[in-house]
Image (cartoon, rainbow, N blue to C red; front, top):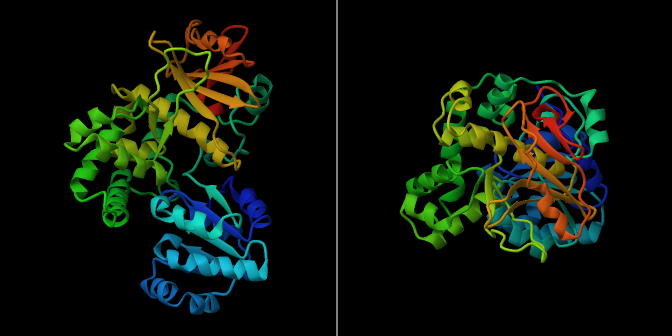
Length: 404
């Protein structure tokens, strides 16, 4: 079974604009399935997971391009970076749009080669797991707090209760889990084993695989929190520079996102460390050893997972529209916090995230902090478990989580 992906239209658009399309993202999010679904019958397919194809690409790149003449999908391009200069020569000579569709799971090994060899020739689409919109078969809209947009979306959105939301949080967004009856725990155990033992072992920065896995768990237990490298390092028994380097690997591989603080000269005494979120709540739940959605929902981490889910969905809504997510957060030394700030067209859209079904009227009390920035501020959202879209005040609306 194929679940329609929001990026289908973007694949076609980028392929008509650039000779090379590169779809990046973590393993198992559906990159290859997406491209195979969009491709017509004339486009060949080759995976560099195949050792024979990989050897040919590395040792005889010209012969490889004769064997797999474009239009072609080349899966896991990071295994043969030697191929990139020859792809450059080919597209410069032929000048055909969309000749090469590439996928890559290891951004930290790949992007330097792509930048050097294919600059100006490649359109890059970051991809993540299934979004709430994709699962509910809704059109993708990048999230804004605009009330009129939300009211219109209310007419087509699928309402979800607390149990349904936390079941989705527990399962995560990997397509394989939603397409077939997989054991969630067994799937993520295999996923972590593959990620650690296959994708990380060749990196010089990671000498101890078990220590890196402990680092993964330490990060998962801090999802939706401010990054503190010294605390992470202390928990795992590594140095702070190593913790920073390893977290960078998680970010560049698409497993973790860092939301930076919103900076403006008019804002004083702001906290400058980023907030950390796992992009897949299922992986995060596995690493922190939750065994059911019910136990997760009543746990001390329930709110952190809810916030992580909301932030990842908002980020996916932008990625699926081919846009860079313009998301920030705010925290200052006076303990004033705003969970998320979206900046679009010079306007600031403040967002609070609450698991509550009935957020209090003071839920957005810190939104007014942004008034001193000197930019226009739109309506604010309190994304929560409310049953309906409703105003809390003149400028703040309670937005049910299933509406994002």
